[in-house]
Picture: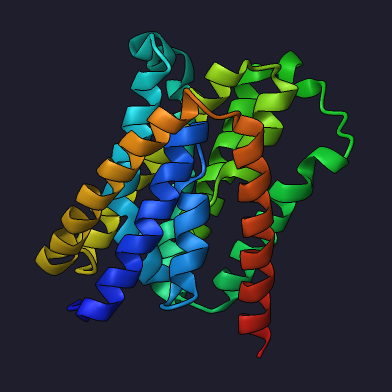
Length: 248
């Protein structure tokens, strides 16, 4: 799909902002980029445009935390389940491409924002690790395939599994990377990710790479809590705008 210069400029600004956030706190790129893009286009196009840049930020985040090969070995079963769920969610998105999925995106963001307010009793996650990986990995992937947001499901799993901050960042990014790779294959097979989309994505990679570099530099100098507060407030506004947009 050929996009206008004005749209690409706005998209580049969105990718720049999302890249800085991701670089500074190790997560957040698709959570920021997708709802912002969804305000100016449909959800399917928003997800397609973020495919390759998301793979880039995921890969950089996994490597920057150190011991990348060990992390892949530890989290690859969860990521494979996420790949399976993402396949199902993406096929449904391609088949229907409904505004309902925009509403689901807004709801998923709200769940992410207020998940720490709810007390969970999910001790079975640690007691039955293989089953929990299947359930949470597939569910996260399915949600990610539909909305580009896996965080609510993965955060529940990671917190109940008592993962460290490093493990959370690497597991989340690996799951998302696997999900994006299968989406590239599926969108391409349906003719929705062609040379034009690839060109647009490569342009966004340049912007995202620069923003990611700045974000990582900021990460070393500024307290991450400040960025998390700003991120959460921005996401709350975006979720509300998206839900209003869908309703009217």
